[in-house]
Length: 206
Image 1 (cartoon, rainbow, N blue to C red):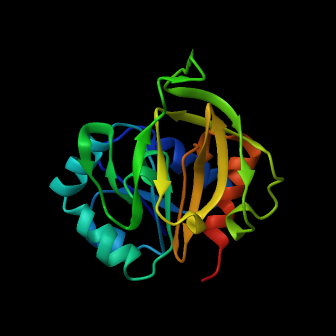
Image 2 (cartoon, one colour):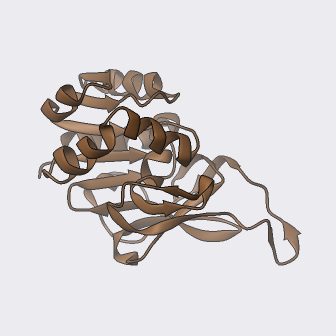
């Protein structure tokens, strides 16, 4: 069973539907015991960093994710806001996050070379793989994925970055370290390539 963490965010059912389409059983849950018992855990969703962390803390799920999932070596996948809260701190709401990956989350600049830069970025953008990783197995380099984001992660150690994209600035679009994987783009909204990556995560051996 794959646990989809319910922290009162939107878009959770889209991930569950995508997993069901792929033939993987999942449960949307906020119960710590169900998340601890799951074979794999996905933290997806949309929303602001401050509200996300507040809900995770109120539900006691910050400790569960940090200690009983990631710390215990359970396969973990973050999607969209799920990649951002893995870092130490976000400029959005000046939020303290899960502190799993050293680094911070910053806003896209308001302008680049004197020209205004639109934020949030909404729509399809090219993703460039920076090093091989099983999450991208069968996914051609420079494939397009669907983004909705005004902020992006900046890891202290760029070795955790497995893919980048470009929206005025080149930014980290996917990370991986051990049992932890995460994408800034929405896998569940990214067509066949997004589904392939979800399937890869579900089948990956550790």
